[in-house]
Image (tube, rainbow, N blue to C red; front, side, top):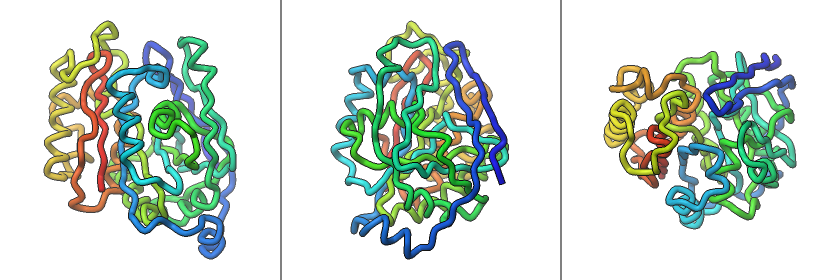
Length: 301
């Protein structure tokens, strides 16, 4: 099995999302993996979801980035981070990065050179990445070295773990699949939490670049009613861990505009699925950038 190339350009700023991949599955025995990965921490790792917003947050000193920095100090130190980013979309297959030194991908355009100059030199973790192949039961997972760390991953990890000393690998989002599939893959990823893996979804609960108000200051309230309504509907469903409502997000108020395309919502479903049933969501940060981008960040466990 190989990846079908998929490249998509969304929004006025040209946020490039996609993949052009071709790789064969790489399997490793559980004994080899356990030896390579070393002893897992005694404490089960939490699951997090980050609303990443603009790539410029990598350079910014604002309430959001300061909260990320504090959050990184609060979290137990992971053996590795598995990132499911809105900016790695595949078609007809799911991939996992297995390289020792993943490259920093500057998958955007129209931003200052200072943003393109940033490198996030975190190592990969091939052993745990290959364990993901066995952990995911919903679909075959293909090992690849043809991706790296895209901006949905490194722009937030730059604040969470500024030393880039925690290994990171990524799992792609099969854009052909429905919401329930992504939640189910998240459930499969839950097993990695006991191996010291911090499962991280990176997207935005509300994300419609064509309907942003770029001159609007960051704030707690959205500049448009549909963005506020959908974000509050998600918050209410999370309070009751109503996963069914969150999987069926199209029925929530404001959904047709708030989730014009689901690429940034799907990472949230991976985090939700990786959380144990009944495991409550802690709101780590909430607010809006550019008027309508929900920066909601969550922690389970």
